[in-house]
Length: 340
Image 1 (cartoon, rainbow, N blue to C red):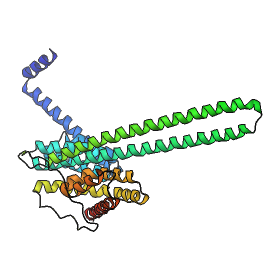
Image 2: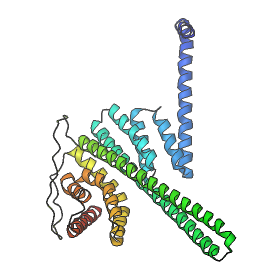
Image 3: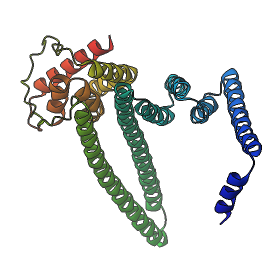
């Protein structure tokens, strides 16, 4: 009823009152835009990147489409330069929606692919972070177990030199220490089981992301094609660099450039981790690092580097170590070529 009354008041109001109301709304909108611009300038001058990005997002919703696109692009660039991955994903999603509404579907598709790649990297980083926390907790548990065992051994040695009436106390301490050791071993087993389940879950999520990337790489027209099974031969120890594939379509080329730029930003640290794990002979760590590299390499070169990663990670335990080292050498050499 209140809404009907307001509508009737608008209809029955004189034209001058309607004009004054419209002018008041325009003045209010100008004030909001002016306040947001002042806030954006202040954040830029003080170096507050998060506040500057938030001001641009708010201002983009109340200005014209062309200016909104410029504001969103500036916000995305600021988030990328500040390495704010979560905020960059939010901004680029808004930018993709704005481009699609403006009819710039090619750029919207490119931004959507960029968002997919960022989500994939964010998932890989979260996996590495959780893995590091698990390793830290496991190390702390082992240290506590060793400390308790050492304490028990000291008590047992002291009890051997006591009088006969202290034997009961020594035996009681022995039972307590054994119980603690069993409890710690049980905790260690539970941690290992949970870590294994987490790895399996993360592997499934990475496989799903690879399928989404492969689907998004289909050409316009939504033509369906069956994914080809990778069966690449084992390369020689000093194989030639992987040949460059045929030049992609313009939209796909821009997508590959974005993926390659993102790969070059984050791959050096993982390449160093891979080399360190190989030098220490930590085969499980080597496989985990290759798993984190595999989604981006599959997106960049599915039949070349992607097939090489799959061959490394799915090989059985009876595989010749020389062949595995040859594949790892080829992988390092190919990553160095991508980074150069």
